[in-house]
Amino acid sequence: MQIRKDRCVGCGICRDNCPQNAISIINRKAFIDAAKCNDCGICLNVCPRGAIILKDVKIDAEKQEDLLSIAHSLSKKAEDISNKLEQICRDRNTVS
Ligand code: SF4
Ligand code: SF4
Image (tube, rainbow, N blue to C red; front, side, top):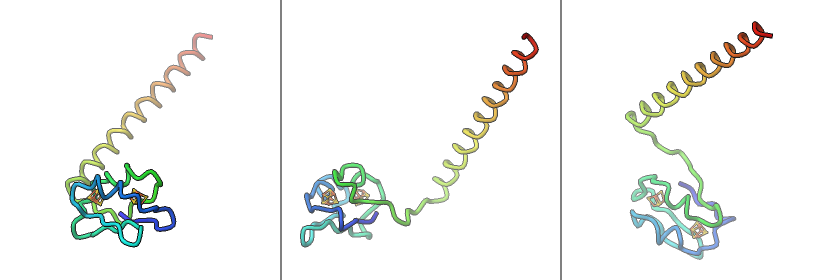
């Protein structure tokens, strides 16, 4: 996670919602202690200013496998839909 200092107004909402107590407000700007942060993404979602962005998110091997499996499944479904659409088009052309 990375704080966009140009957007942060130091409201502390991210700090109050961080389950790892990884966020401090210093000089009216949020600061994330990378050693405590577990990349859960809560702060990113609660910030009303869109001041927290993803940066160098580490994905472990297990998560990477899950993501690849989801991508594969979606790609297969897209192919099935495409084939069905093609079949529908062929059927319509045959009928008319
Ligand atoms: S919630 Fe957003 S604006 Fe508020 S302190 Fe955190 S990063 Fe800054
Ligand atoms: S990503 Fe999660 S653990 Fe890291 S600073 Fe944000 S709320 Fe805290």
